[in-house]
Image (cartoon, rainbow, N blue to C red; front, side, top):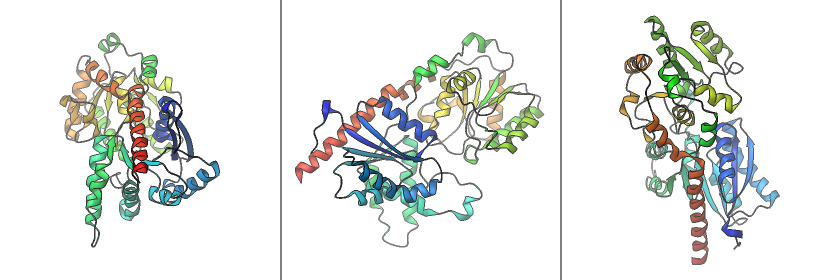
Length: 381
């Protein structure tokens, strides 16, 4: 067995989709962990091919690099069952799968519903079954995926192996994605007095402009506000002109008189400065596995309006901030626009549990436990 220096473990992090929240998680895990983490990546494109082909690509990269890690941790767009079988006999290490998302419960567009392919969801199931441990980014995600695995196996003609879902559940834990709150504190300039004295409040949308975030519901809300002559300003940071030129122009044409900002903000400092100047966060998502952008906006002083029965209840407990229907969303938006300043400092304080400086210790303890368990297994054998 290897000997560790200063009890630091050697960890190989495989990210087959190195972009967006995947990149953010990998980079910060490396930054904050006390252990030695080596990163191997593939570009963030062609996710279906990443799920099919990344395992063999990483297998060759690992052999060429001659890595000898204590732990291999990979994020969810990879076939871990293939990778582990290929590396059998080459490495003696623990395997962990980090579930950013899964293909069993990810919402389908109207186009994908016609050609829904169960194989990618089944691949997630096999990967979880093959690894030593599975980490989820929220309790909501873990519960949803376990339930979806049972439903998936119910579709099988015989020998549906339902007990395998309990195996996955028993080796699964939740460690969320962290945020750097020191950056948020440095860049945010939300002042209670400024918000209190505002005559016209600003509505914020800081999510991806894609079907699973349900921008249609958001647009319907804005149209109803206009029909009823409600006064508001509008900030949309999640609609990129280069990627969604048609939708960008349509929003500009219809709501231009309300818009103070429209478009993606490249600089994180400028993004935080912008969202700290807004007042009301509207979330219309059909699904969210965790919700980094939601936490950022709330922490920067926005009062959120959130759909019920989703992940957001893990970090927001105030029932007045949730809606059950499109009508209730409208009514609460109007109330928030006409109310005096709402002090959400109690929510902000609750969010600090997601600080990377705190969560990194949870990750590190988990990694150390995995190595200890692997050594105990070797000694027993």
